[in-house]
Image (tube, rainbow, N blue to C red; front, side, top):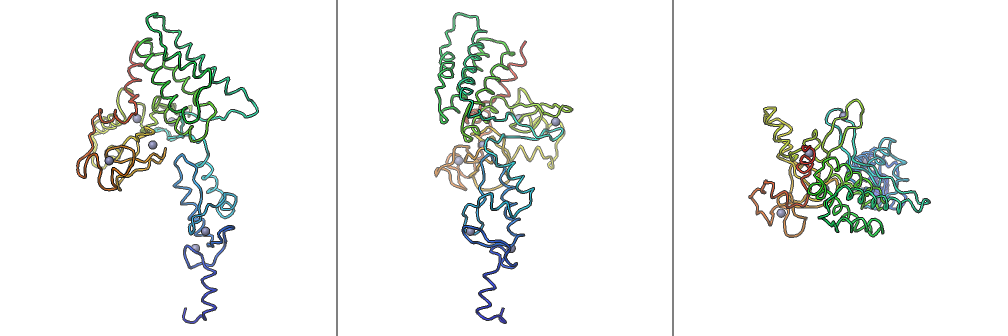
Length: 358
Ligand SMILES: [Zn+2]
Ligand SMILES: [Zn+2]
Ligand SMILES: [Zn+2]
Ligand SMILES: [Zn+2]
Ligand SMILES: [Zn+2]
Ligand SMILES: [Zn+2]
């Protein structure tokens, strides 16, 4: 640019895109006045939107100063399909989904419908309904030996709507563990498990914040990992935790191992790769895969940060390249005892117990 005067030189840079420094600016952001060419801005937003498939709402920020750009502003400059993808990925109360292993239809465990605000009593009504369902399940037990004070206590909690957003997640978990245990040890009747399932679905429809819903749906999936493909021509039952067809009686990992053995796997087998690079997120129970990187993993579904080697919640204790619990070279123990410590119930085993009876 030797041919430009200092004045021209300045105006040259003032009019350039802040990403490529090459094209003339097409747009200037309202608040921070950072400027871009349309091509760069569209590519940038598309990149952010495509990678925003976690369950938290992603804010689009200025690529230069990181200030939050309102959707009404950035959406003016990008193609309609980018906006559509953003809206699909960034709904609050979004459901975790997987694609059917047979026909690729997107499948969810449950959808959230927020109770209508003008219909004041709907939530109290639902809560009383849950109490009624719990007591009905309890009434199936005709043994007078058990008093089941824990189940009565749960019923009372729902009757009195005695929970907050912060306690609903643990209440759901406690309710499921207690009722599963009751069906298993006192009723010995596998058909009753569907009642526990219905109770879980009703709890998921109580009035709650989107963050609570996110945690609760994963709690539901950890107890009921299997769904049926909604495509009526397919209806394949499959596992939301790993994405493979339903595998009662085997963990996701054991199931993948068996599939590998059956197909006479080669080194190119995608299951082999997945098995070697997968781990269950200790928070949401979904099997996540990782190619390479440091020890810190942020689960892309629930956002939980943990150490890939020892699976404990991320803290200063485990470094990015040295795990405090297992040391640098030692591989984590892959036995089921180690997995049980993570606090995620192995429902494939428990459910198979129910369904193989009677
Ligand atoms: Zn540019
Ligand atoms: Zn900016
Ligand atoms: Zn299907
Ligand atoms: Zn599975
Ligand atoms: Zn997770
Ligand atoms: Zn560690």
